[in-house]
Length: 481
Image (cartoon, rainbow, N blue to C red; front, side, top):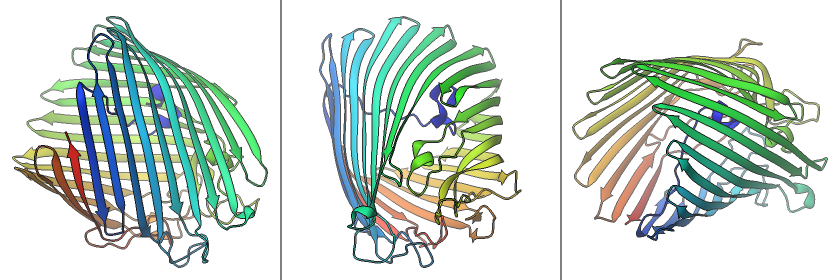
């Protein structure tokens, strides 16, 4: 998907449709608490006016805070046994105006503020990060003809992150990034075929209070085209993209084919390439980024088989990703030129991620079952070692039973062993987590939610000597008109 959506879509796309107001006034809200002294609340309103120039709106706000648990364990750098909590608040909104049938303009925004504690040695000072995220955009959507839709969007996003390790001025560091982006996407249909054309202009800026104050910027102009063709049992798509930036003109593309055998059975095959420039955090974040990091390039191949029929869905996929200069988080940092002792963003010269995914879902009366299994070999081709903090086996199973106003469910997440370091010397054991939940519909507008995470109180690590949550419960009340 990176051909159409850019480098951030290398791993795929999760498409989220924000709430859009409908006729009348609609309100939703929720409150909740859990065993780690988490408190959360949110409220949203949405609506729309009628008429030729209809206006729709949706606004919301939320707050969450928690005492948390210790971020580190004995043996970790900066270990402190105190709990590390957080506070997070957000406000968001969307407003659209129907200019004429098939034509609308709108704006949307999001502001989020986070205060998160972490460990950086014993002491009374509240070591923490403060982060402000702001995004805002305006757009115009035009259905010029029956088969041509155009969307133009201008957006700005800001990320201001400060780290505070002591009351002294020397104990504070700051990195601020800003991204301005203009996109113009055209979707043109030819019967059952679809052509998409995209132009994007992105300007990124960074300012940091690291040992050498910096102010850098880079501009990327992107051009992309994708064509999807359907002929009876055959599905075919091809796409191409060019990104022009300080790294030169980089071309990527993808080619895919699918064949429907009938009876719900379909086979697919695809080939693709990708290019991802390192983020400013991976280049300049104090104590983590490395200016020497190079762009990541990849080639991907996939074969898939899907069955969907008689209430059963089954998928089998083989994949192989070959990456050059793959950007990973390395602990300890292989580059010790500036005396750093922790982790850093770092290039793996050549890596291969190859594996198989099996998944399925079905419903038996009021019981819904789902599951997925992954076997993979994430390998550093230069050393022959497994990539750090990546399991070779992973599974996820779920069961949900609903009857009347009550719905209950269980989730089981299983992961095999991993290694905390590139040399594969520090082994992290596998684990299995059991989560339980239930919802009760109190009436047309209210519902209760109860959840127990890590019900078996499993002690596990995702990174050596860093804390994870034990058994915890959550209870909440939701309202929705």
